[in-house]
Length: 246
Image (tube, rainbow, N blue to C red):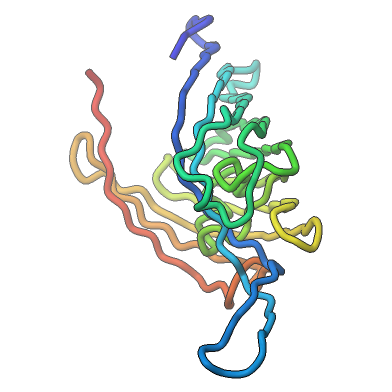
């Protein structure tokens, strides 16, 4: 992490990372040959095939945090990912992706206090990527507001956008609404597009001086998506975490 600029209200931070990551995604419409044991002729069927990828990426992230004249807290983030063409076992990829693929993610959020302990935080982000970017560079609507309401790996693609708004009270109680849209090239029958919306409520409870508990109820407003095997259901999340400064 390299702080490029910092004062009382503004800061610019550059972070570089060398990442080795394993990923997987569903690719509906992939044609797979199924051979029944000791019976009949060869059969073909369309199944949801899970594509695996093991890849090394270079990541550069530039963050600009600042306050405006209305005392709003703003965050602008630019994230660049470039595949380095390295993998452990190419045979594990059922459908080969481009190991040198790239992706660019641009995001913006603004938190505005509106009085009496309430705050409103609108946000938007979008990603552009190579058509053959692998699962480890997929865009999952840019954040947990939608991603957590749906099953893992069922609302993601190479390119997409997400927008939403969060209302919070004293940073303890919150509610959100988000909409996202993705474009997925990772299947054998052409580009597929998907969109989804989600809402939810949550509460963050301080347990000890540095320990917090979070309870969140996430609701997928679109009950069925192209990449899901079944119907999406409401989900309850409970987590406990801590933060220490040294």
